[in-house]
Image (tube, helix red, strand yellow):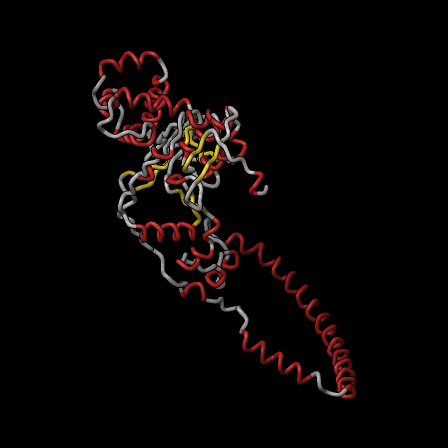
Length: 391
């Protein structure tokens, strides 16, 4: 479209492509208003952006050069005409990013382990020398090559005759030895004690096993830069509940067709120096190795009662009191308290009981809609959500 074909009048002008700005732009366009959507950045989503590793490094450099001073919001009131109104959708851009530091826990260069070759690896210098010798051999005359071929054929015929005679003699000897071994094996079976095996049948350690094992390669900083486009990094790390308001909005507005989503396969928690899987569904509870049989029954009984009215009546006695006290009153052990408080309700020890139970019920209602866990996330990063509304 040429520049002169672009409209010159708009009903709504929106600055920024953050989540709030993108949702408002999509809603205005849906009802038929003319929308001009602008962003001073070279990327979508603002604080919700997703970057490749190389783009993230560039973004960090830009933020470091800009400094941590907050930007003053410009006064646009002098540009407004009659009937126009200025609305600040969000002031996230005015909140500066401070204390930005980069730590690298990998080596700057490739490790020496990557350059180690197996013993069977060919030597390139020897191959080059052999190739040079082959070039010299090809320069021999045709008469010399024919004489060599005739001599080799005569020698091969004599060797084949000798090999056939030797093979016939070896076959006769092997037949006699096999007959003798079969006769002696019957007598040896009675002499062997129970639990003992012949020496020939005992396994022997293979000497080539260590040589065949591949060497593990450590990821280096150079490799991260090289493979940086194979993954994305979100500035804001968030998960979406499968029955949350954002997912419902994506479905009702048909914006979900512009992105791909993936279900979180499992939830992990860190406790007492170990990373453990959080049992979410009934199958996870009974397959868990961290819980005893009694704890599994208590957990299933509690999760079932959370969706019933009896728990809502018991909640009134703990209104305003910490959720942790309510869990202790239900005679749940330390393991179950940790799973329910930090991994299922995602609350703290000071969270009120009514808020903790509400989070637990919401977690349970979202189970099974799209997978084994209640969480979804965009396949290419959270920055896809604002882009979908912009489209």
